[in-house]
Image (cartoon, rainbow over all chains, first blue to last red; front, side, top):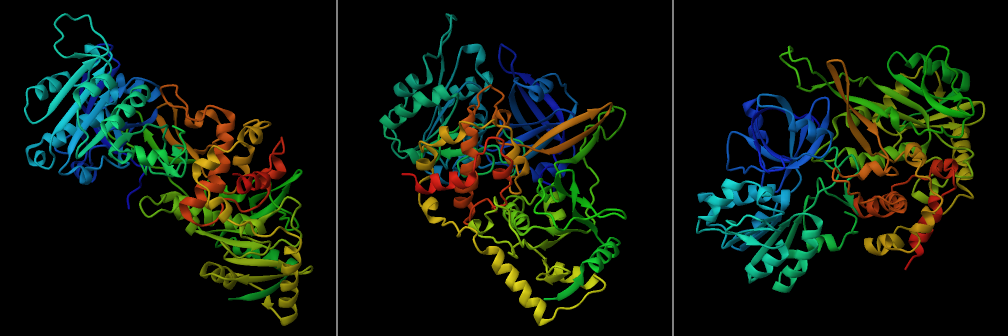
Length: 280
Length: 346
């Protein structure tokens, strides 16, 4: 068994500034050793530790899909020491990735079901991974209808703008983009908070699983909407964030009750979370 | 099983002889307290000690350990690539470890030696360590090992055990590691019936008057949230200073932090003991902190030891009753009282 604390060395292959406040950037990494890419076999919903020698490590959801080969991508918000340093790094720089870590969205359970994806703000990253994965021609037939509600504060804060526009044009996925507000007279999508738009656009919980990722306030107000639609707590899936260090359930800080968010999560159903202390 | 008798003087000579094959740690008096130190030529071990202030957990799991090293020099073709830092795994023996502290390693093993991600450093150092215990003829007033499933002469987690018979030690081995250690120990003679009887008498005398084993069921049967939402946590935490002494001294506390340290162009990734008593332990980058209040952190410590661990591993409480937290807490918070509150709540 290889050392689970030792990151794979990677090179930054591309950097895309995603939002108008320049606080979110997507980093594409290429493995220095080709065989490491195979070892880093991941499933949408998982995360990894981005490891910068001299600075430290941060746990970040994987934004690329396993169907995209030759690289892995992460969208990182500039918050603390490591993420601020990362934002100042450039193409060609060498750093590390440790993972994949944690569990994933319930893909086996989702087979043959309608999928509702609800995302807000910069928590859309592993949802992007999931959407790309599901609409891959080899995978699309495994799922029934796919409906997405994705919102941000304003149009300039939406992630993956070009992809959103391309998904909008497809007929095998239904995308409802929304912003809290905008003064753009040409804005052609929705205006309103995510829970409101969910209530308007998602009409049924029949044979459906909902995956919800976003800021706590969005999750708080989306839950009653979904429950009113008829989603039982075991079909509402959430992904949690927590301060982490080891990422493998050993260092002891990310527990909720007897579960570790890094190892037993980050993906939990609302039913699972209700049986645990609300300490997150 | 080997049973040998050593005069106390011969035992010391034997230990010095064994330093060629093992790095040997023994309890040594340091000011008002005892501490485990390597046995060197002029070391004076103190086997009449009660227990060390600091548990010996650091001999397997150092308080601060270099995990990796790296160069940040752009001219170095290997710059920014982490390499394993050299570590010492040569055989070591902790001689005179108390049964509670050996028991603690068995509990902590469940965290570090998991099937999915065995911690490479903890596991290897644990495997290279032989634990030669010293039974407790006179447990301290703060000891409650018997309540936690152990005892003053409990063999759990030990490779061999010493019985202090006054002028002599009876040394008894139970594992391959213990057998090897005693086979290498020069001198000593086979234990006679009289010595064995005295050892048995010491062991039963020491356990007399110690608390009865605590039942797990009253806590195991309660829902996590009923204990989590119990009304007494603010009271329990009222006087707590969040100083972290309990977590630092506890032989079963295992939490760690990972930090990078750089000097010039050379860097180390280091892991350090950490503590759930500190707010930074759970502070998110966003500023949100799921345990930002003192009572939440105190609750976490007790819930982890007495409920989460019990539920997760079905291996008893995550406490061996060594009594250090009781003895050294500056505001006299007593885990035995918290255990009663939890068992009797609702």
